Image 1 (cartoon, rainbow, N blue to C red):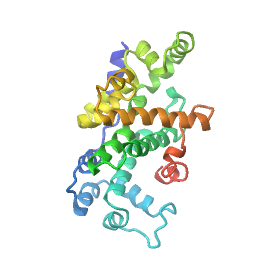
Image 2 (image 1 turned 60 degrees about the vertical axis):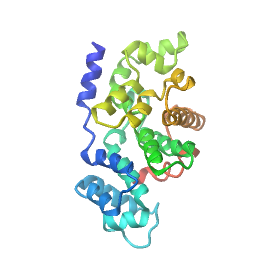
Image 3 (image 1 turned 180 degrees about the horizontal axis):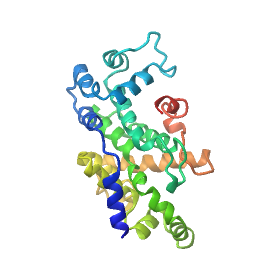
Image 4 (image 1 turned 135 degrees about the horizontal axis):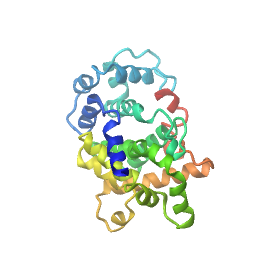
Length: 262
């Protein structure tokens, strides 16, 4: 029964836009050019409008108003513009609370951006394609929570009892009660969206401690695994309520920047 509910929730999740999918592809292309980037984004009015609004915000502080995608790419660089486009595309899923996980407002957006940036920091000065994979996987690693939110909310007491009385982790309790955890569900969402394995695996495996410990996963998965732990720990120290939020790890984009993208 629950498996059917989960599959239904995956199927009814708003689809990953064609523009966002193409942004993922071009992020991994070391030979991309300015016209390539403009051609990918320009036909999506929502992402284009959000992107120009971000560029013209006080956060970036450009003296002259940015009025075209060409200007935005020239001023901000390929990587930054594409990452902003990915963030804009993710607002469909993250620009509201995730009640099943007690995440309010823009908390999931803050957490996701923080993890995307922290994963790049943990990855060090990798080649451009590696940094792009880290950013995308970090941004989307908790997409499964969007799918499971209502199911977790309805069974929260049962899940919490396992955590408090049986010493389960929350992810283990998800698996026990629902049959799947949010990371596994996120991997299925990524598969449905046609994302490459290099992004699907970090999403699906970012809570699989045993496989990380045994070295079964590649380094991208390990970075996402650790960034999720570090960012959440940092958040919980600064926000006793448990809602995800900005911290030092993501201070460049979160905090003052989140109101700009949202």
